[in-house]
Image (cartoon, rainbow, N blue to C red; front, side, top):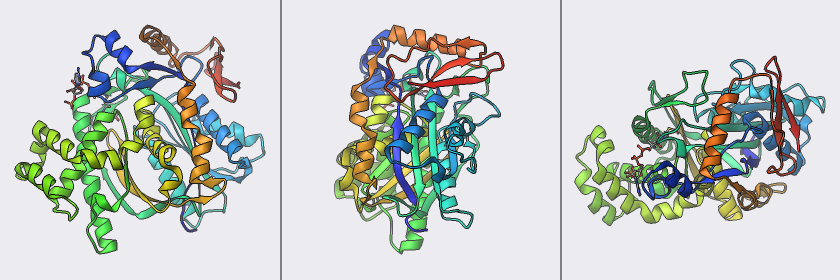
Length: 448
Ligand code: ACO
């Protein structure tokens, strides 16, 4: 199979959200801390009628209907998630309800979990399957679904929620350049979920930021090596049109891109201009460790990378800024933002993505885009996803109501024997919602 990659995409995020400016005031944080300091505008969250299973049911059903894909045509279904509802039963098996109805139970794949990286693992599994000898000619389907919630404190404004479904096959408008991949995997405790009684992670915020940037540097190094080996020339930022990052909050994305510019400078890549050389010169003698601690380097590199950031990264930031960290879906929501903003203009262009999951697992990989053929075309993907419409029809909750919802969700997490309000008035038609968890912890959903 040639040009294996993403044929179609759909995104779903809860219509319920809280403005970061209001949350800032409510939390007693200094004005601008969440909006400018973290770079976030708004945050989506699940109310008691939504969860990662309902969101993924919605995303998959909608994708199949809108691109007119028969459920029988799916031969592999992989889910990436770090939101644990059941320690044994995969989210994938819940999604089988959609396929069983049409008589298709011959579908490989289960869930992949490692913090925000599970979606990328699922995506690679599906792409590798289509590229392999065990491929049976049918489509792969990848679902990234997470509800990111934090205990009260500095991490809480970095939550979010969404599900993204991606159809995988040959002759894709979004094709993998599978040879260009650099990974970095390591044992660290930066963000983890050892307490199975709580949905909230244990997080060492500062360590997680440094781990993220170190993983980025290492992946970029391996990525450049592989490119150079295969293409016989140096890779620099000028060799890709867009860079898409896992986006816990936008400030980290700004710092990440600046870090790549610093990497190009230290590798003496041809693309670095004279002003960048001059401004970053004083930092060329820093050791690796020192470079992660230097505020002056951070400032100088952000300053020299500003114009390039606006061109190569800014178009990817809309949904992560508006919805928040969506864990496994975060990187792909950034990519969805790019398709929403540029659609057909992306034909012929190269997009480099960086996936990071705490603990840690990370990969940088490359995509080559083509216009594609209806319904699997860049312009149709943008139309189907209707990002602007989905953002516009949201309902803002006050911070008090948001906190109240979080308290209720804490009670409900891991609980049994309850019925929800079944109030789906805020959900759009076609959305799945949770109605009941019975005395055997079995979960039931309905579709609006
Ligand atoms: N106006 C403008 N900027 C402000 C203001 C203000 N009033 N107040 C603070 N800031 C800036 C700070 O200077 C800082 O920016 P800088 O890093 O460029 O200096 C930024 O706002 C954040 O302020 P901090 O004091 O560093 O924030 P704090 O330590 O309270 O929390 C953190 C931030 C650590 C990111 C926290 O939200 C967290 O733990 N989040 C979850 C972990 C996470 O997302 N890690 C990323 C990778 S792992 C993953 O994806 C889960």
